[in-house]
Amino acid sequence: MQPRPRSIPEATVARLAVYLRVLTTLADGGRSTVSSGELASAAGVNPAGLRKDLSHLGPCGVRGVGYDVGALRDRLTGVLGVGSARACVLVGIGNLGSALADYAGFGTRGFEFVALFDASPTRIGQRIGDLEVRALDDLEDVVTATGASIGVITTPAEVAQSVCDRLAAAGVRSILNFAPVPLAAPAGVDVRKVDLSVELQVLAFLGQQRVPAAAGTASVGESA
Amino acid sequence: MQPRPRSIPEATVARLAVYLRVLTTLADGGRSTVSSGELASAAGVNPAGLRKDLSHLGPCGVRGVGYDVGALRDRLTGVLGVGSARACVLVGIGNLGSALADYAGFGTRGFEFVALFDASPTRIGQRIGDLEVRALDDLEDVVTATGASIGVITTPAEVAQSVCDRLAAAGVRSILNFAPVPLAAPAGVDVRKVDLSVELQVLAFLGQQRVPAAAGTASVGESA
DNA sequence: TGTTGTGAACGTCTTCACAGCC
DNA sequence: GGCTGTGAAGACGTTCACAACA
Image (cartoon, rainbow over all chains, first blue to last red):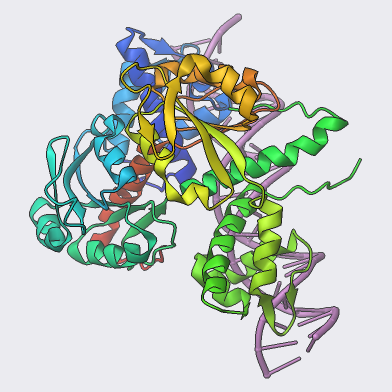
């Protein structure tokens, strides 16, 4: 039993995933130990923040020495649940959906797409990687049959809420939404949003905000 | 030496972009005014938070009435700089890069891809939308010629830092990085990261964290 | 000595409650 | 009366400084 399965902050979970990626690389390179400073540098974060993040898992390092690369990797793998592959379904096989279906980064991290759906007859039947695009009508049956717990929505905005409702009703617990609309889901279903246009707009705004300052005082900042 | 030149919090900027999207839809529907409550509901945020966000732009509503849809839309358009189209270049034309190059959401929001680059001879010369994929060697020349200020990186992780260096040296001020590595950039260059595997992992973790609680007390929460 | 783990200070974002104005 | 604008309070996340320990 864990002493405290107390909730790990969301921001910390995101960084743990990054640490895991770095540790995997280090382990593949034959490295056996790392210090928080080196690991933090490779992950692009503050060393003290990294140690605080890891402290949520209980002690995992050796004072005066550092962290055991393999042990810490395994610990993070367990906590993040990367060990057991989780079944995902993807709805909306446009350009972005196709790209995600093929994205190598998912398969190696405990996720497996088990079905792709689209409403358009021209898309249905297409093969992407190992999978064939299925009709949206089959969504409920397939989710039930595969026990998929994660859904990814890359449909046009107009139908995203409807797809979300159907996924939730079929038993999906977590939804990653790429459609540019806020989705409402029943309690017990998590929705996470990725809005690519917003990312670009924020970036552009921050950039333009810096330009006027360049005339007088040079702002010496850091980026990571 | 302004005590506060005009620093709008980053989180606020991200939401302003969402408000703008909702307002555009409302305006297209012929709507003339909205209350903060209704606008917040459509954007998936708290009404008080929305008012505070807008307060960074100075007064933009009428007490007792609400906000003028068209006027607020134009105000946000100006602040976010959507009016003047900004030139972007995209490096790495794999599945994700191709999808982004074709993504309709960007063109309508003040961004225009002016060039696509890839290192692979099989990709060079391909047409995506109106653009032809160019050799990575041309990057500096094209950035200079077009005055592009924004770069998007969708290359493999191994070459992302090198591409970042070249973009920065060529004059790009803002970089959106989809490669799963933290990038170091010189002062004055903003880097923003989108990590799709991390998004999925966070989502999956939050979902699995909720499962044990489902046995006893049902957690009644909201998702947006 | 060198590095982890952590309490405390700091800054940021969010939420609340209400004053101010139409 | 209704709704905006905003100071104050609270929650959250980050950073610092140092004690604990191999």
